Image (cartoon, rainbow, N blue to C red; front, top):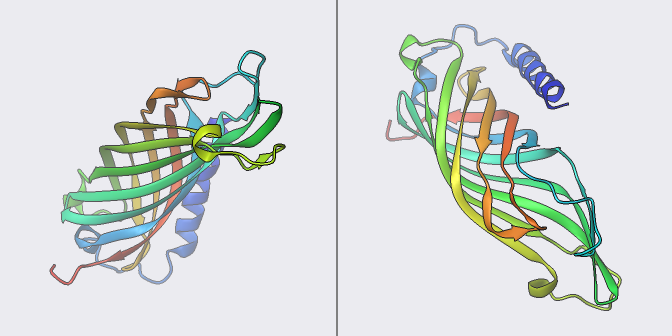
Length: 226
């Protein structure tokens, strides 16, 4: 299923690039190597870690986790060198729904993961001034997971007691391709492995490793100092 979804994203990336390429075929391909980047990515979070039981009669809960989930990420990349961009990103993914039975009531909600990452994007072929720009990424940051309560059959719930959370400081590694469509707009295809291992279990598991593949659109600009 993940291979099929990934193939669809790659096809969409290629179709969008050809559609949006527009009238700037004569643009300066070296301009991209001087520009900052700000944009969003939409894609798939594919689970590479553990999954909780669908029904747990001991801990009294039910889950509906998928192996693949929709992933959203916003990012800002600042140009450090023609071959290097530093990037800060914020991401979110809903892993699935959870219903917990305790003290004669049911609390229903979701397990949501948030990412706050800093990474370097290395463009090893930037000196060639190509129309596309392959890159490698390495970085890390904060992975925060939370089981929220959206509905309860009781009269009330206490967020600090009825919900649970976990936080991990870990790494991410990957790569992709940038495709500037003009002097201001670009597309990208991004793939990353994320290592997520909470010290405190979240829904009875701690391993939330993932592989993501996403398509992004970005605004490109030069800072006034360059």
